[in-house]
Image (cartoon, rainbow, N blue to C red; front, top):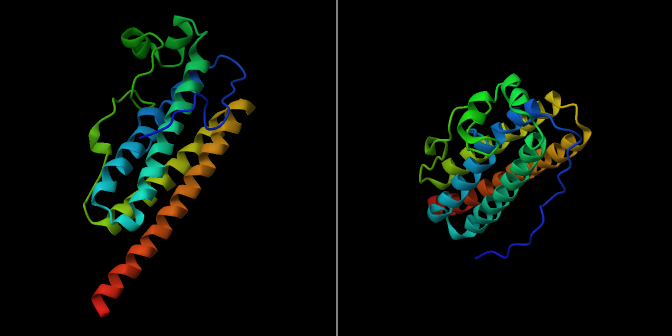
Length: 189
C-alpha cells in the first residue's frame, strides 16, 4: 500500500538535551489532538466518506503518520542523553520508571492514549468538520509548543508541522464544499 522512504518528511534537528521540552512534545505524540489520533481518525473515516474525497483522508492520514515519526524523533533526540535525575526533574520520572526513555503513547500530563480520541460519526460533512477542528487544535498546540521552546532547531520543525496543519484544514474545508455541492444537487434536482 505504501512505499516507505527511509527519511523524515522534514529534517529533525535538536540543539541540546532537553527532557522538559520532550515532555511537552509528547502531547503531539499521544494526546487527544496529536498525530496518532489524527492518523487513525482519518484512515478510519475514509471508509464512510464518498469516493470524491476518500483519497484526501488517505493522503492526510498517512501524512499524519509521517508527522508522528517526526515527533518521535524529536522526543528521542531530546531525551537520549538525559539522566534519570533530569527525567525526574522535568516530570518524566513516572514515564522513566515504566518505560525508561522509550516512547509511549500518552499526553504531556502522562494520560495514556485512548481510542476515544478517534471520532467518526458516519455523516461525511459532520466528520469533515470534526477533522477541520482537529487540525485547528493541532495548529494551536504547535504554536504553544513553539512558545514553550527555546531551541531554534526544534522550532523550525514545529513551524513546518504547524503549517501542514493549516494546509490540512484548508483541504478538509475544500472537501466539505465538494460534498455540500453534491448534497445540494441531490436535494434540489
